[in-house]
Image (tube, rainbow, N blue to C red; front, top):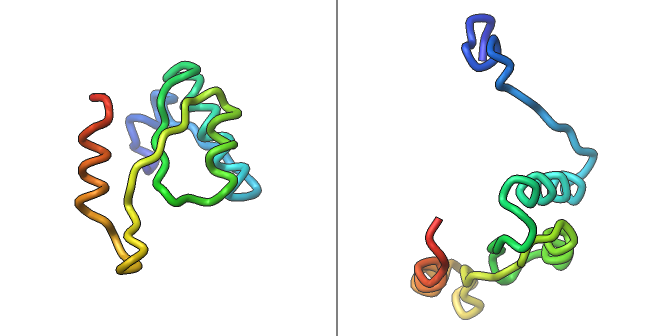
Length: 91
């Protein structure tokens, strides 16, 4: 953005500041729930941090998980991730 920015001039730019990662997630979860609607599925990777599921759940979202980690290789389970993501709803 700069002084000649069209989105800025039209008032289409907004910002939010949070004091922590958890606080930022809660703001994001609430924003997503507000515009997508309560009960909307929200996909988190498995495994994820222990506080992520309750943060999105308390915002009213239906938390679901997708595979991404292969504990045998300590790396990406690309096939598992694609299988889970392809099985999810469109949109």
